[in-house]
Length: 66
Length: 454
Image (cartoon, rainbow over all chains, first blue to last red; front, side):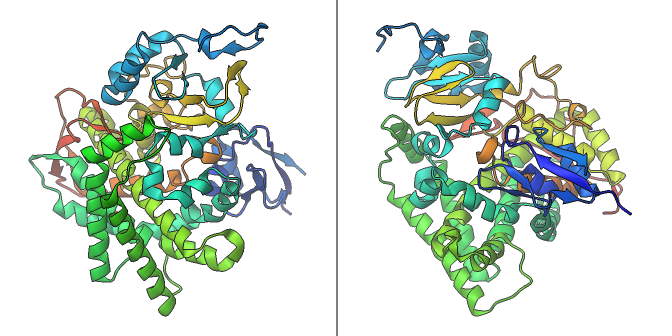
């Protein structure tokens, strides 16, 4: 069984550049306030998600065990 | 106007910030002698003010805190679209609708809609065409003799645009597109353009008529519209160029505002924004590699091992030391306070990219070309901003880095750059871009053995 993690984006830190959309296609979208939002707030911890975490330019994305 | 305010302001005001002896001279120097301007102006401190006749009061800053405040601004008081309209040639090239969109609330909506064209899966779709362009170029590049690499870089960037953005294959239409791009290059780099640009900056962004430019742009749009019509007449599902992606967006989201005219506008935008900038950075990479044989050697070893990490670091470091766009700006739409400094409505804030990237507070040995600094350490978005940032960060940033990676890797498989002992090429301004002064004059040699199996 795979652990499920909770993905959150801090709208205060996010500058809405779309980097996470590039490195983790399908996992994030740009919401109506111009900042990134997770498509699935609860997700399986995948390599792509790790990549988005490591590349997040403003440390706005957080991943916690659900 | 310098009347004292009746009550002391709790904020720093622009009038208290340092100013060069002559703002007008400094302003001219920023364009004409970018390196000398940087050395001189950064002596004033992280922030300084320019008051140039007929221009908005400008606060220039190389403080990462200001960069953060500008990029994270969610109040809407700072506008990139308005700044472009006022200070850049974008309006006459891209048209009123694109610029209106840029400065409007719809910006986020449309940006979200077109983002997929520049990301992940779409990029992989563009790869074969990019590799093809580079492979053909390998055979055309003269070896064993000094060349101005920039003109070849431009050819490559243009071929990529024609294939990847426009996807025009029908020979007659493709040659018309090539002609449009030629004419546009010539007009954008012309004295007529420079004069109009200077006049527009001093007249609140009003441009003098430029019928020759209008003609080329309308020819260009005609090519786009014909291509769209041809595709509608003979639909194919296997197309992966930007035009196809835009048409799919249009199809999927009728209310997105993505009509054919808007698509033509975006194609123009990609053509102009993606051509010269990418060609300039490719040239700078080659200019840097020729003067740093040890970096080239390490790069070749890493490519031979099938690893792109060092290549990415080389591109990132080149964009740091030689950003093609040396500054970005925001227009202050209403009074705002950033980092305790009051910016009045109608003033501007300029992020001095060229100075930020060379700050000794942010980088060790900031003048040295050391790609290693970015190995395992992605650039900080408030210290490294060749593509701007925030909601206006260049949409093509990933695409352009992807393209440079593909082109450079393919070329370096076959050719190597001979060490160059002459002085570093200076940053030389052409309209708004900084190019290598001698257009990356280098000598390429054929590799004796293959670098790696790709």
